[in-house]
Image 1 (cartoon, rainbow, N blue to C red):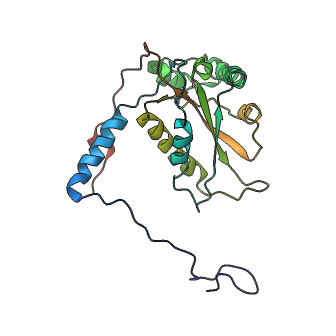
Image 2: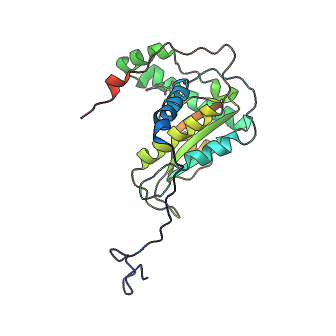
Image 3: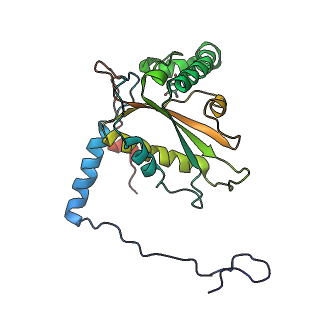
Length: 230
Ligand code: IYR
């Protein structure tokens, strides 16, 4: 069947595009809540970690986690993401140096008193040793319109969902992560050799938590504070 107008080449309303059957794995209704609960309990053990050890990553984990991330839904299925995996020590050193320069500016000048107060319980400062200690740093870029790349839609939402899947995949493989957000992130194009249409959105050290790692004593909001039933 024709899918485009013969003269203009424009898609014809109602034209048939290829489809395939949707066959999700069947879960018996009586098992559904238990499965959701098990996933919740596993995810509830995820914590943002800032102290990593240099234990190497098992073969293949990062690749499978990125494949999982890249299954995320995206606006018009453009899949506007790029995952740069930095493991080379010299590249990590450059990344740390450049990130710390931005962070010094942030903590010494750019951040408002209100923002610094909100960060105080996390114990963060300009120093980012984890960018070198962690065996891998995944820099996630949004891919905007450029030569050879289509216009994306809902880019931030799409990339955010992909990063959620990435963190979940790495966590269930026993790895620790940190969603680090040096700001501004333009320096990452140069450090990661990426073209201008790619804009860094997340810097994610990945590895094993240090044996003596500690995390802030914080709580997640209970369901009645995050869910509204109508
Ligand atoms: N990007 C800085 C500051 C920072 C901001 C927020 I919002 C945090 O949740 C944590 C840190 C840094 O990485 O230190």
